[in-house]
Length: 264
Image (cartoon, rainbow, N blue to C red):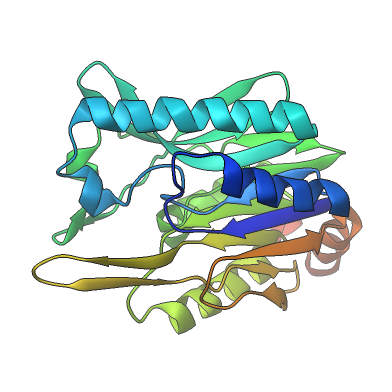
């Protein structure tokens, strides 16, 4: 099946840009679209100083746009979103379909001194469970970029027989080479595709400049990069073959060995 990754910075309130990309996807036969992190909402450092009512307005408006676009173009979209419930904020990922929306709260949050999402958001700290859904007999799992650093996340995805990991991210600074090595290794060791949509754009405060470098990519189940974007706003169009994931799992057989030990 055909999928797409939209490499974006924060979108304007107008639906025009998203509609432009959805029209491209429709013409190319795309069935699933992945958006990069902090595309529907402002970047985290901006959210820290933004009134909750403004965040809520931004979120509700973007949810309406995605619902309408998915109905109009008969498409699935997976997109990070900030949910507002009362005075609490939750960092989530939404799966939009023509008929429904499902929300999955992110389970590991960045807790660095200069970027402390764990303190800011109200997400519960629980045992990790990969959000999974099936489309065209292909099993998709959603793993946020930061969550990709934890072994337990990949063990859970392997146990759930995920074929494709959808990974929205907002990686910045000088991490591009490290991320490329990590994604290739994770895809290979877990015999899964990884479709990553990474943010682009810039943010500056009094202390530091944040440059989001893009490099969204598709990594195949053998750990090879099939497609990769540059550092500007772009769209990645790709084909996913379930048989490739099955072939890799059969070839290496790591899950089978884990099952013998009661771990798979």
